[in-house]
Length: 191
Image (cartoon, rainbow, N blue to C red):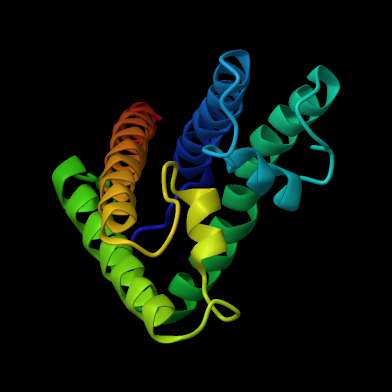
């Protein structure tokens, strides 16, 4: 089993989370400039998961950006060593061969898209079957721009949002991970 280095994962997560954060906050500002409210709720996610993000003011946005950046590195540098520890216990007798991990965009995109769309469809059907008090529609309104209610049009909007999110995450993650994994392998070859 190959030991995974935390740096390529950390930089990939950094790009994914930072760009996602900037896009979410930026779109909200653009919509507010045009007087459009009630469509984009992504900033609510940041209010829920980032302790320093308290709204759309400049100090809060900068603190949120720092938290997203540091958090992406913290996740990688905490999770990857734990993963490596458990993999090394399992693979003590195996020969360790160093070769780069290649993450293909298409494979990652289709995997993410299939999984998230399946989950979304099951949750949507669940929402239709249970009453509004147990519905997850309030989450869909936050996570999926343009999602309004439990209608076929909103389902299609959510469907397209998930395809866009899957493509975005797959592209950023595959490109940055492959780049830094390749550079890490080249550095080890010269050492």
